[in-house]
Image (tube, rainbow, N blue to C red):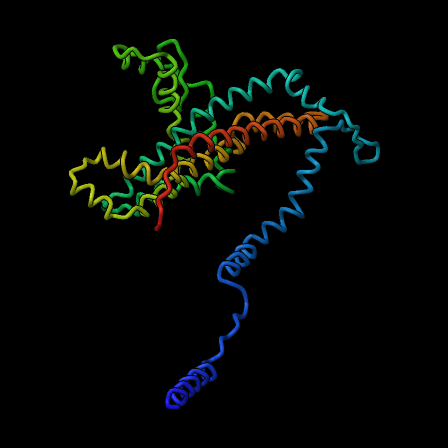
Length: 334
């Protein structure tokens, strides 16, 4: 009898606990990830709307022009006649200068891109050190990025002194060879320096072009420098302290710690530099195609050239991204 009473009391307590327990509130709204995704779409919405309404019709017309022949109609307007891949054949086999300009331009950019990435990494490592006035030095290295955009770039392009420095006619130094005003060293000087080191002429010419092109390299490494700085500052100081305790030298620390940790930034900067270099208006391929556009009936031919150039750039980006991705180290945040 007592057992039944005790069991009844326990059941009543359990029932009371169940009844008195507060009800769970239903979650109102979406999860945090969904809210972040929605905020991201709102952030990029102006670009998406502008791309659909403005850029997408232009891209469609450019593709359409590259497969057609344009004829002007009396009274205004134009008429398109489908010719297939004829414009692409004319660009490759009829225009004698396009392929030559394309090959030389890609070769020059392939040589410039590693120098820009390496120089920006070198500058970022120096500016990441604890030195007096490093904020001022960072601003100084980033100023060329500001000066080469917008209205200031247009003013600089009409600068007479800059045009003289870039011209092929230079100062006669008495050696029988004309040297440009922007030329810092010559191949003869580098050959004399490397005369006892058994270095080929190709490397000598590459070093000469890098030294003479140092102004352009510094101008184009500002954004890459900031990206490398952000990557260097994200490395925990505890890692460097443990390396110092273990007796690692600065050279070993760079190759074992710094370089692997900033390898994702190397991939990002390389892709950014490729796109920036291949799409800048002052490279020789873009300048040549712009000249073709100004010819009579050159719009359709220039469209074909632009799309071939675009596909080549995409192919180069895919190859570089595939090669560098194999060596990229991503730190786990576990």
